[in-house]
Length: 295
Ligand SMILES: CC1=C(/C=C/C(C)=C/C=C/C(C)=C/C=O)C(C)(C)CCC1
Ligand SMILES: [Fe+2]
Image (cartoon, rainbow, N blue to C red; front, side):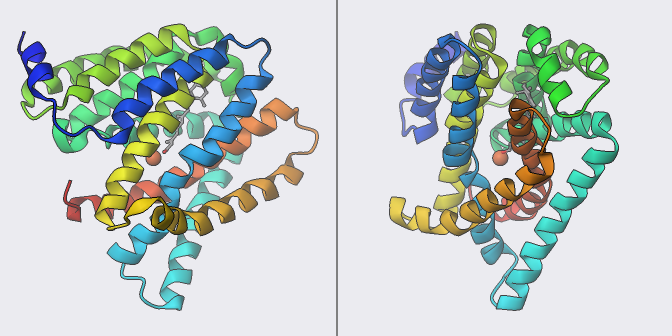
């Protein structure tokens, strides 16, 4: 009952992600319905490059501000440290892919939790993240299994059998956090419901596109861009372009090393092992920057 009143009263400003996410879900539904896997892979690659990746590319601007990169050597040291952390993750992935994949799923849940942690708390955020990732794996284990296998895992059964537990735990934590935190936003419970609907209807990759490219990334871009005082599309584009282009070049440079790997697996590896690698330094930087940021 309370929530209905809250929904009616809470008619204040809505950030772009509030509207983008339902639109993304509908677009993803359309893609899911196209025949064959290639439309899905093509849209995954394009939307990752254009919509998803740029939110991480703001890291250079975030670091300039919060790590005081006011000289060229400091900027170079930051970029080298960031890339060394990413290279470390890739090296671990090549050695122990099962552990790396399980770790990636867990730290992704923590990272996705940052979407709501400033309202629902750190633990509430982790519940939200477990909900997001538990859903597609629990609802479509047979579709997710070969995708995990393309990432080099051979203990996929073990990881997949943990998903319903993660989902249940996430659901309980999220519900408790929603009940306990009066400053919850309308989207904090609307989005988990839409995510459940999306996970039920969509191919897991289409679901990921809807969440990552149309909710997580635009939300982070808006928050970070406002914090950095980047106004208008032109200025924001200028801030993300160099790092985004450099990341495209690095991703393309990985492809020759994957000769002989089937092309769908190349795409999966470049995108998801790449994301696993970039998320570690991205989270460390956010860990430093976010306490200093006015939400
Ligand atoms: C591989 C894979 C999945 C997991 C993806 C993850 C964990 C992505 C994390 C992205 C991050 C952390 C982005 C940061 O901004 C799904 C969707 C469960 C199902 C299909 C295969
Ligand atoms: Fe992110």
